[in-house]
Structures are given as C-alpha cells and as structure tokens.
Amino acid sequence: MGDIVRQGVVAFVAEVLARGGRAEPIPGQRDVRVRGADGSERVVRVCSTASDPWLARRRDGIPAADGGGVSHWVFVDLAPEVPAFYVVDADDIEGGIEEEVALWLADRPGRTPTGSHPIQRSNVVHGQDNWDPLGLDVVKDPRHDATPVPAAAVRVERPAAPAVTDPETDDERLAVVADIGGYRVQGRLDQASGTLEITRGPMEGRRFPDAAAAAQALATFFDDPETVPDADAFWRSEILR
Image (cartoon, rainbow, N blue to C red; front, side, top):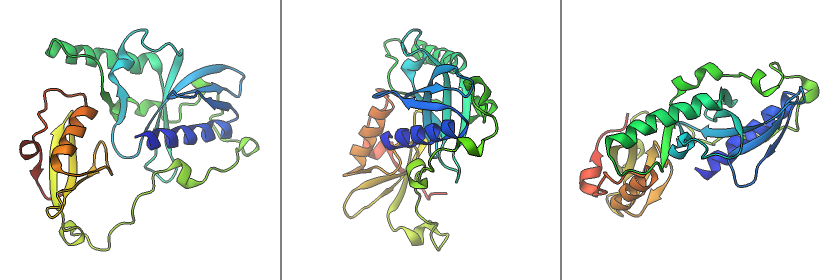
C-alpha cells in the first residue's frame, strides 16, 4: 500500500507541474501543498489505487480530525497507461465518510472508527480532470512541462498477460476467495507448501506462510473484529474469473 501511495503522489506532482503549478509533498503525510498557476495555494490530499476502489481512513470523516487544512482530495487511478485524476472538494468526501461511518458505528456500539473506508468511483467520477479549483491550467501547456517522470515511477507494473486463457493451466495453485469489508479477495493457495498469495483485492501481491496468516492480516487491515480468522471458514475454493 505504501508504494501505491508514493506512486500516486509522484504522478500528481508531475501533473501539477505540467499544468503550470508547483507542488510540495508534506513529509509523513498523504498531503501535497499546491501552488496554482494563478498563484493561489492550498493543501490537497492524495488517495491512490491501482485496481480497487480507493481506500480512505474512517477517521477522515471525524470533524476536526485533520488539522492540515485540506481543501480538496485528488483520487489517482494508476491502472491506465496514463494515470487518471479526480479532484473533489474535501467537504464532500469527508462528509460522505462521516455519514457512512456514523451508520457503521451505530450498527454495533463499541466499535472504534479505525481502519480503511472504501471510496467508489461513482463518488468521484464528476471530478475527473477538474483542475480549475486548484488554480491549474485545464489544458497542459508544453512550456510548463516538468522533467518527464519514468513510467515505472508513477505506474504499478503488471505482469504480461499469460499466453493461455485457462487459469488452471497457467497456475497449478488452488484458487480461493474470501469476502470481507465489502470486498471479494482472491488468492492462490499452494497446497504443497501451504503458502497463500493474494492475487486480487486489498493487499494484492502479498504472500503469507499459510491461509490462517492471510486471514488474520485481512481482518487486521479492515479493522474487522467480527471476522474470526479461521482459515477453513474464511477461505473457500473457487475458480478465478
């Protein structure tokens, strides 16, 4: 996840420079200080994904929890050849998180607002290439282009498509799935060694020594105390689609 965050920030900074602005990542935070082409300044929160819904934090919806003066969020999609950007007013995003987390807390008293909160594309699609609120040029000007950023620095490299379409002939490991936090997580279980690799969903690419360790890691990632990380009950076999 940390690498995805870093790549999203790198891509956003390059885009700001190409649109006549200046950008300075704030150390230790998800935020970037942006100076627009019109001279205006603001702090923007960067949220990145490579394949899944964006993951904010439940605490992002707590009033006054963020003291950084964030005015907008930019959602960076690293999956396309050229990263896509969605700029949305912070009040809209944080207000939506606050409402949904309030319902989640009310559903079971005693919960704490920690862990991740998914942001669906439908919630941000209206902000695609919405650069005007940041004081940036809507059309890139070649005079403002920054030094090109290597593609590997701003995109998640994905393995080449397999030569065959049948996953069972390409990967002999057992295909397994699990549902947690509103997500379907897919993985591959090596029945000889017991190791399990998450191949799609949150924590994609992570490898665990066994299915129980993978289940525990996902329960911790989602801050979901209701999920009992029993490997036999958590994972089930299914052909990946």
